[in-house]
Length: 270
Image (cartoon, rainbow, N blue to C red; front, side, top):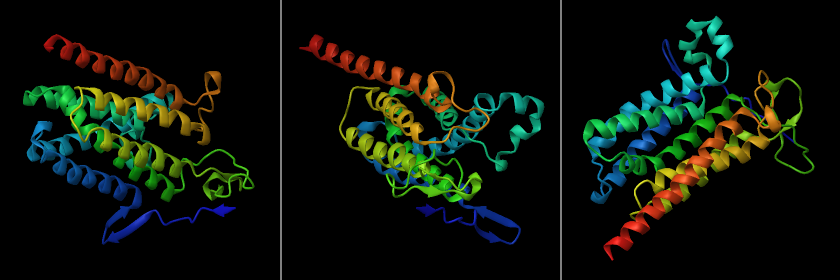
């Protein structure tokens, strides 16, 4: 079996400034958004300019951080932070929720579209394929920190089962952070990038993101250890799975709806 390498969480220090790998992974994801977004903006039919990409990144960062933190506070530990409200602001102590970050980005996109006189569906379709690569780097940050490890795994069946010393039990576990980086990150990125390379019915790319992320997150949660202060909930599903189910339903309904609406419009024109 493997043992987690126990990386130093500090990437480097510059005098009093300490840069941690987790924060650095977020930065890499944001840079990836900027580079890939500017490349996509070269195609005029997408309706987004390079300046729009720069502004989306700035406000998107706020949406990710504030949404991710508030999502964790409200969804995972509301009782604790009700008793310790000041700690809700201490992001450096950890605690970010991917679902909350997605909601934060959604709010930013709604505001951005209205303030620029653009179609929300068009903006969402542009941004959706850029999100998974950021998720992948975030999960790599989790792995470097040795946190959010997986459920126990038999190394005779899963040869990459890994002991995470932070778990404190010397039990081989699934490296679920890498599963999430590969599925919610790389696989979803490739699928959405390929799907969005040609014009689609407005809203279909964004709906595909909701559906794809929801399904992949739901599946990978079977290999991820539930948060110890929550455990498994109803039907022995984790909170992450329960939060993913609405995304799956909404994504599927919208994907079908937007596809049929385009078909109906084409029929009327014919």
